[in-house]
Length: 326
Image 1: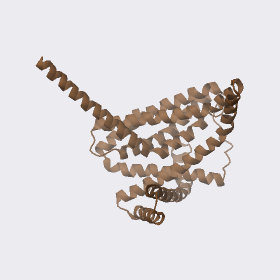
Image 2: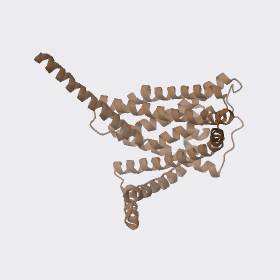
Image 3: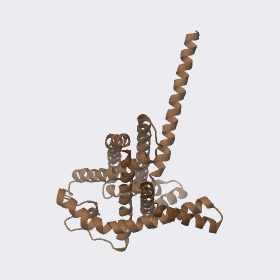
Image 4: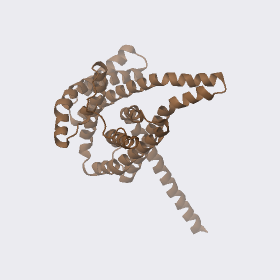
């Protein structure tokens, strides 16, 4: 009996350790996932355009296909790459993270630029086989998954950089996988709600038994275009802010402290001048400065991408790169 009790005690101890490990992984995944807010919001803002123009019955299946492609991107390709990077080239994490920050700044600044200088689509910019709905759906899904790969790479790099140092490979893998799956479910669950909101509003307005229900349906239909505009604005602002913040912190870690120190000094000056709500004021000033730096950096990168990077990609692959695709 004493042996059985000892065995049960050992099992209980192992269970406690395992539970603590799972809790630690979940906590790290949540904190690290929060760091990727800018790319996550951008992902949610970009994806709905890929279901535009399809029959309502195909919208959710298309979102589901893109979500499955996103999970494959994160778990099959990017997760092993992140673990290898952490194990054999941890020095490369900061430069890669900064590269993602540059991309976020460029994407955000390009969207701001197009607000003031709308571009005209190329006459030859049609999709081959666009008259075939099945082919068009496959093409759209493939394009969305490719775009998701870039955003997912940014997200996974941000999550990896946010994890505490000295973690075991299984803890890192668990935190990365949990954050990746959680972010994907949140993003594409939100996208599914967004793309079906109009249909739900129309349904409520048509079959609602109460006047309040019908009014709610009409309100949903009326508000969705404004909501999509707001989502794009928030997504763009988040990209620029997070991209600028990543670059500033990356430069600080690589030894160039001037931008970080200047922003930190301005934040302290603002906190002392206002004298209340120090945390909110400090964060707001820091975010504003990161955003201004990110916007300026992105504006500089637009001609670089347009006149140098995109022609190089076009010459090598025969296809336009990101700059030529917008």
